[in-house]
Length: 126
Image (cartoon, rainbow, N blue to C red; front, top):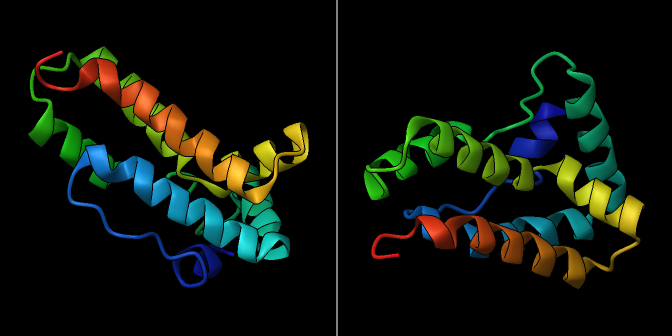
């Protein structure tokens, strides 16, 4: 199912970690367009199947955090990256749909809001 996460649910590009909330909205909308496949991707990545990447945006998010918020401590950087990467996953989409029964637009809103809540205290000048 790794191909589906890269091809069917290709993530929008973002050049700033602060653009991730918008990218998450788009990714969650894509999952909602093909929910049957999104649930399979979520199950595959959560089970650790071969070639499944539970955090496909990790390297990019870490690079952006280093570039845009260089004074972020190592432990906080790790927590922020983990939270953002977890949000950017079929597993997060599936949990919000299944566990909370959220509609597609609500899932997208919740993911974007949460990413903003994680990033806002880290923003330069805060």
